[in-house]
Length: 195
Image (cartoon, rainbow, N blue to C red; front, side):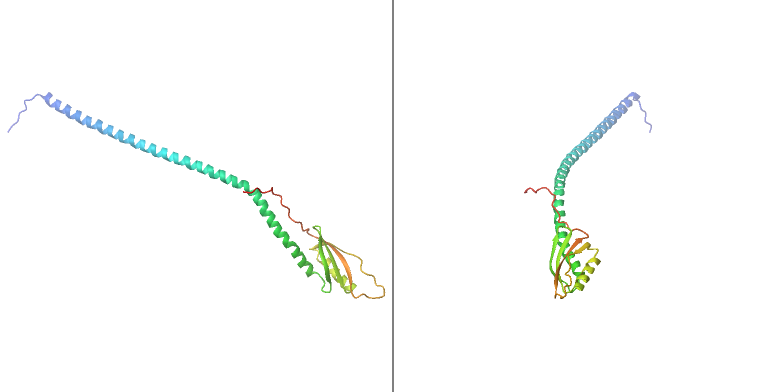
């Protein structure tokens, strides 16, 4: 069977134009919807970035506060270091004389009896001792001269002269100059304020 189309062609063109207009409207609505979605996504990103910026500013302020506290604590460090150095100096100073006396004992002749040992200033020892003979005193003095790492100079007062009778014992004094002076530490810090 044969179909014949007797309608004019402009009727079909109106239908095509209508279809193109509907298609164009759908396309415009799709593009508008896409633009709206993109803008809302950008607004969400902007809000997220603003929130991150606010959070970072808060953290930056917190860091500045911590830096200020650290600077305040660093300001306390020099007086504290002075105190620590002074205490460590005292502890070391308290060990110096016992070490000196141990070394002195090592070089002391066994037949010598000490009556007194007194520090004089920070660089001398004044020793009063008793010897049974001039020979014992001489041996003692030679040992003190050998202790050159301890004493830079050793002097002895007059030894009794032989006068026909030999004494059982005699006292003598020795002054020893220390090779390394022993100086008490001094505290150089400012007076501490109560906290």
